[in-house]
Length: 322
Image (cartoon, rainbow, N blue to C red; front, side, top):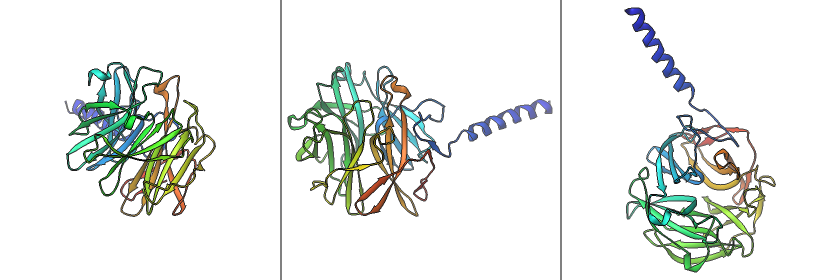
């Protein structure tokens, strides 16, 4: 009897060690990341938000009938799937829609998580709308609010930004992607309040990702070449409303075969790092698209650089990424 008990104990102990051994200590860039169940993470064109002890990664999932999925992690390397936030069944207006680049911020006054995204009805990208959804729980399904064109402008690739004073802003590509528009949102974050600026008119930029470091805001974008990667560029400004600098090249001519989706500040007890998050698209087999997490470096207050690393380790406690 004791022999069998020992065998059972050893079996479970080995199983536990096996699970522990699967915990990631580094991310291999350019690959399809997997969650803690070994399933491919589908959160493309996504954004990140820290709530309590967890970082949430919310992005596109093109599994049939699913639009937006949610993952969480305490260390940014080991991810747990938490559910689908938007599906075709969420609202009649989503039945034949396509959703891209969802971003979520939290409204302290209304106690709501607010998602903005690019909304298409059909597959020819002619609808070119923004859309909004809300939820009181970041892990629960969101309620679709509406789709619309901000002040009548087309809206495609986009990002959402909440400033330190609680004001929120929406950047999106307009006029067939030739203009990057900047809007200030209403206090509840569910509509546009003011059209602030048209950034680099005619510049043909998309995939905006924004962060503030010190006195400067940094906005990274890509060119418009479909699924093919291209030269990433960035600009900086002391005010989110501008004036913004001229666009400058960053990384190599293909942004290391990626397209920007988010810049994540990693605030630790020793330093603050800034992580570039990009998608390495596979337009033919979307689920094989990979991800890139790379530390951004700053040579001075307004010069940002991005260098390649095959893999990256992240220490959320200290704020170091290497």
